[in-house]
Length: 404
Image (cartoon, rainbow, N blue to C red; front, side):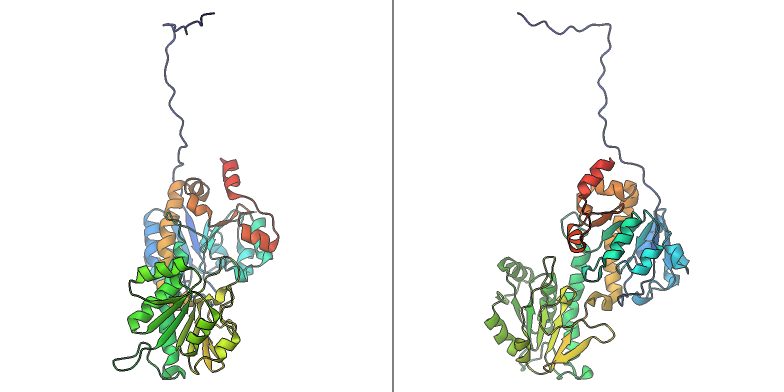
């Protein structure tokens, strides 16, 4: 049977329908609140007056709690001149749509939080408590963490900046405790002509290790780096451009090098859990009297067996006559630089959030922001936190898709 040809009648008018696209919503006006931090010896502030000025110039409102920037030497006047409103009541700050903090959410913050707020802050896994998370879930909060936030290139920009600060600061700190001023053995880091250079051992070839090595080399020290990843050692060698002594973490070689070093830096990164302990108490006991250990990985447990958490108020202790510096939040000691680094990441992110019409729309278009969200409208979307606290985990991608 012959197939009949389609019949086109001249009495109909045929028109193509326009394609319906996912139209972006119009931008929304934000009201951002910056509380003053009182816990964790936190001196940083997440937005500098310059960043606040840009946000206000884009038509948004910023409220800053009085003296919030004091730790970074930013005054209330700096903020008010940038266009922020100075507020004296913490409760009023927490009534803003978006809260930007430089310390983790505390119990007292939870009490003040309003339902459906967006909160941007660090998590600090070691100090996170189950009841704080539950309270935030109850209030249907959306929370974005500094540690897991990724940029377009897939890197963690805030963690990277903080690691660069910590790495660069390590040698300055070690220099202080080697000098007579702090009861050290009176050695100049690096040394001078005619005197052998000081020996620096760095355990970990990540960003902290790289910046510690750069600073140590610039000061004239001799640097030896240990890491179990040959790839990381090669990358560090290429980035620094100078031939360095590198080795995998082999206990006998490590113990031998620690015996004669002046400064040992713990810069191992943990894959999500605790940092492995690679330097035993016995290795430390054989180190030179008056040598300095700076354990940067102490916020994840530390990689020296003798390490114990210290504070910016009392940063060091001695064990086996070896000076231990184990402050978990080194960048907070260089608060102004750290605040500027955090601000450089958050200011463009906040403007983009407003342009896209809110965080819900932003994460629909920008996949890399999704990794930073650990609570979305009260649902826990971080698998580590759900496993650790035995709370229900929900896949963020499914949540977003169901809301479209």
